[in-house]
Image (cartoon, rainbow, N blue to C red; front, side, top):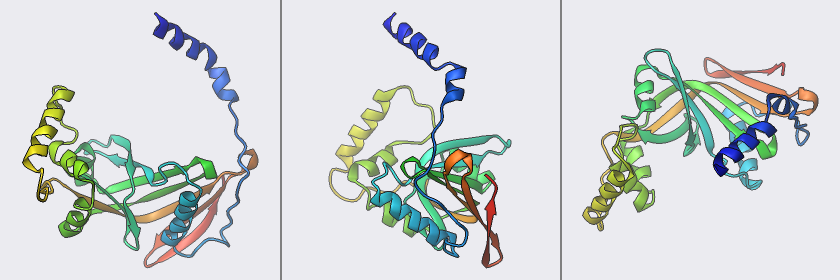
Length: 227
């Protein structure tokens, strides 16, 4: 009963009218196309550094959007684990739903939100698998428990209950108490090679700054977008 009352109170407070009235003015920073780096990867690294220095929670958290073989979109939060001249790097189970999506359609998008800085970055591009040796190097740099977790989980597959997973972990802890944990054959890294990157800076009165990079051969075209 108490839970129902709380839920009812929430919906009483958060009516559509109240939601429509929510407003937040953004005024911390500005962004001009004349000030950005010619390379979007370098510009991203600059903003990521600011997010780290500002102690933004989980600054490498990002939404990964994929499309399956039936053209249905799917999105989930991932963690960025590297960025270099190739693009944006993350690791997961190739047999997962996202892995299945990327197998049939390598087009994907990322979105980073650094609310404390009133910024977001949108990335579009093509995804490729990383070389297995590179994935292995990262896998064995992870905490021992995380390595066991990757070995225990056939990501996205249905399991009976939580107890099933805990028993599997317990078994693996005994089996690999010492020595190297083998990286699963279905686990590894991806790199999203960007074809477009947009940097969004919140501004007052919803007149936000939007600077977009678009790939043109080996070069990048930089343009300002209307908010």
